[in-house]
Amino acid sequence: MSEMYVDGMMQGPAGRLSMAEMSRQIKVVATQWGAVDVGISTLASLAGGPPSTDLSYVMDDARAAITFVIPLDDEAIRKYLAKEDRVAHQKDQNVTNTLASGIAAQAASYLEQFGARAKAVMANNVYREGEGVRYVNQFPDISHRYLAVASGLGWFGFSGNVLTPEYGPNVIFATTVTDAPLLADEPLRDEDNYCDDCQACNASCPSGFFRYGTKEKENLTMNGRDFNYAKRRAYARCSYVCAGYNGVHPNGRWSTWSPARFPIPKNDKELKTAYKRAIPAMQERSMPGGGHSTSAMAFGFNGDDLWTSCGNCSLVCHPEREERDRRIKTLHTSGAVVQHEDGRLEAMPGDEAKAFVAAMPPERRRAYEFVEEEELAE
Ligand code: SF4
Ligand code: SF4
Image 1 (cartoon, rainbow, N blue to C red):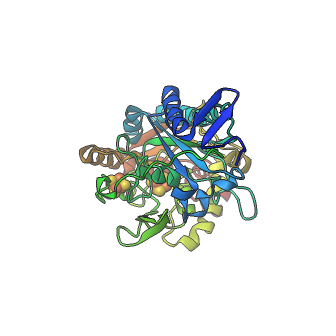
Image 2: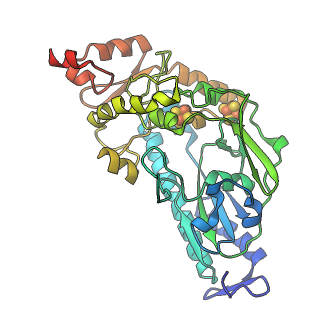
Image 3: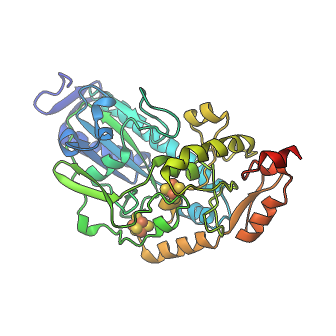
């Protein structure tokens, strides 16, 4: 900890403030920059949490973390779920992530000017280095999700997404880690959590990531308080769909925004083989004219940026039950996406989408579904 913190005060070129004053002021300025809520967690409030609550990974002597909430655009989400417009939500994702990361960087600078050490943790797409870290199996520097719950910004929903009281899980978080011993905020009360196990998130997921339903739970403890959410299957299962290797739901009636039709294995052990089949096809598909989601690790692996095609488990969830019901109905009647030769995506009824792909010549079709070698040789 900096030697500046004498008698609970911080002091730097900008002046001298108590920890209580800075804990209030950093929220005031972050709100000016665009955050709709701000929460502070500390070593004590994160004690006993999962490895990605370890603030020392980001900064030696870290004492506190400030997490910022930036909402996504609801209208763009509704059009995305209805398969009316993918790009508006993609652009909103990109801009909101950048704004969140920018707020975290500005907060770090603000703290430094009062004598603290501080470091921004980007909203997304930064991962721990080291043994075993590879594409589709990355761990974040810290988890904004756990910090958000510990600092009272939201509750875990059944899905494990963090549900904020006003925007549900449809927000972007970013965090500033500091050595200043700021004052922690309390987690929200469990009894106020709006999650009623409606299962819209489960029903929105083609990959079966939450297949255990309400019975089995992931449990964790922070500062002596227990939290839980639905037990998840292999993370590679979500990535297989969320990154766009496959889009169509096993029932064939609707899809994500990915036009790929590779089968989703029932058994997690078969995922590796499924990826081997789906990766070359992914590398043949491209999305012309912008609307991409940038990730250095994905570009390094695929030689191309990804494009947002799922996120459904978050997007269907809303604090109001009627809106959740509307969103899941919209998704289930939105059709299955196909890709035209010019790259354009179009949603159509599931049987028409299947026939559309089946009518392609094998050399083109193999970008969307598995084609036997013999067919290609004919
Ligand atoms: S969609 Fe329903 S079950 Fe899932 S997290 Fe939201 S409220 Fe909970
Ligand atoms: S992002 Fe998509 S594939 Fe991943 S868990 Fe959510 S709904 Fe399922």
